[in-house]
Length: 263
Image (cartoon, rainbow, N blue to C red):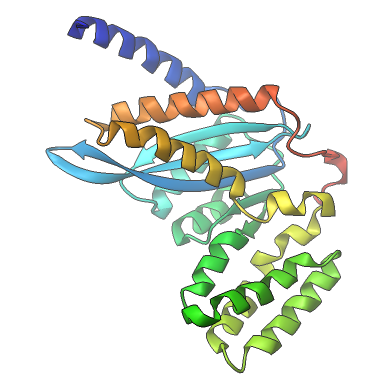
């Protein structure tokens, strides 16, 4: 019973709010930790139904609070798309980044190295474990996973690194591919050890964003299929605005002494 003109007016007002949120300045605080990830949603485009990538960045401020930094939609997660997205965050004033956490998607990894100069990169341990288990027989998956988890149960950086070497030696005879993956990914997988121990569980994976992606999936599933990219962007932006507002009023995500972080 709502007129098309009224729907258009409401959408126009929402689009203005969305533009303000996506374009707001980020130079009010430093963001030492930045998390990047993507999810996919179906949408119409030119008479076709395609999967649209929704890329999202969230950060932890120098005071320990979480904030949604930005989002963008596109046809794929290639390096050019991620590079443009990260540059837009820099252009809006994002600074003070010490560690970027993401999966090992080639385009994203390349963009982080190009744009986030001076920041370390942490490869998400959860995504890494999924990649490992894809190469392991189902009957051995739990044993291999439990063995790798012992790496992250160590109390100091030196012990974490020593345990990884022991795990490689233990797995190499039966699972040489897994041992090779651990060896190749060592530096990226253990980047978190340069940061305060009390932060490790929060910064060695993209779990923070996984929960956000789950909420996006839950809310967009109701729509089933978006008529265009603008409607998709409108809804996802509204979800992330709501999420960011909740974070601003919730307790700190981390107790953070900014001057104690590595340069």
